[in-house]
Image (cartoon, rainbow, N blue to C red):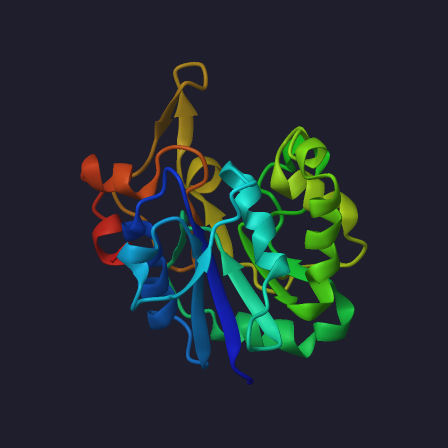
Length: 230
């Protein structure tokens, strides 16, 4: 396989620890060649780990993710990963599958776990051809203020613009699980999440979207996080 760009977004509420551990997890679980990039407002903390990309001052919160499509990166294909997406096992076969299907999609991803606001597309893990998707960033930038008012956030806006999406979990049934919806159970009228003390690590990605975040799992002493988020 050819070398890819690995990119994350570490801004605002996310500490540099998140970006460093995301890179660590990816490095352990990908056998191909890659160059790491981080869109961040914490460059002094991440220099030496990543090639730094300055945060767009006009973007806030989850909208910073849109910036990944507008970059001039050295390799043809890019993998973006959310910082609260944990990588448990090797994903090399997934990336190779995406390469082999490269003519069949604009973005390869996994679907949102609950079809948020009726949109299947999920933006936590995105594999795409960098130059081919620059139009998405430019379109967003044209009306940046109004686009940032889109209800439901970045994945609602992105999903509405795409015509060809490859859903990786349709090929790899063990690709991803949600901490909230697959591992845990909501209790007390859906106000408290109960999670088991341990899990079978027989899948590739654990999505810690919403609460609790990985650092909170560590604080409450959840044992599995000790060997994953490092």
